[in-house]
Image 1 (cartoon, protein in one colour):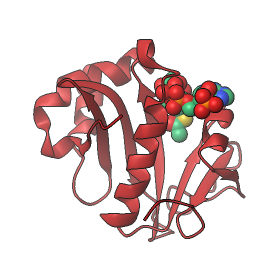
Image 2 (image 1 turned 30 degrees about the vertical axis):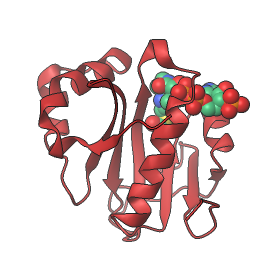
Image 3 (image 1 turned 45 degrees about the vertical axis):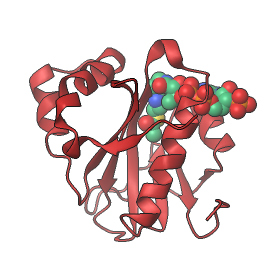
Image 4 (image 1 turned 135 degrees about the horizontal axis):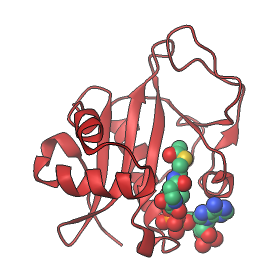
Length: 156
Ligand code: ACO
């Protein structure tokens, strides 16, 4: 299944489609969502989209972690509702990991989930101590998962 995962800011014609995909899952004002998506850049934050036949079928956001320079925080991972359970989420995450490693030179990916632990466990993420993702604030309520790119087994 060779579908492209590309940075949103280099493919701005997909902004509206991307906004709708995310808002169909997590309702938020279109203005606020578009504002957030427009902050995507070559440096973090970066929004990546999964395309199939010129349609956005997946999205995730890579955010900086001020206290950990060689890591990022993955959030808003979403696959088009009708296409879930077909491997697209795995494809999106795997390509995002390659992007983090090869384009951003990052070593660790952190994320937080309540409800999708099984999905991330299958991808090799394991639980770790809470980390601070906003300056000095330390999250104590979320389950933070991480994947250390040095330990991960990929084909390169
Ligand atoms: N619990 C257990 N296993 C799961 C779950 C789950 N919640 N979701 C998927 N899996 C399994 C699948 O069965 C599959 O197993 P298999 O390889 O043995 O067949 C494997 O994980 C891979 O599944 P995919 O088909 O690649 O996943 P999918 O395309 O459905 O994408 C996603 C997963 C992104 C979580 C999708 O279901 C979705 O968009 N959900 C709604 C939004 C959401 O909750 N996003 C995550 C928020 S957390 C965050 O953003 C960090």
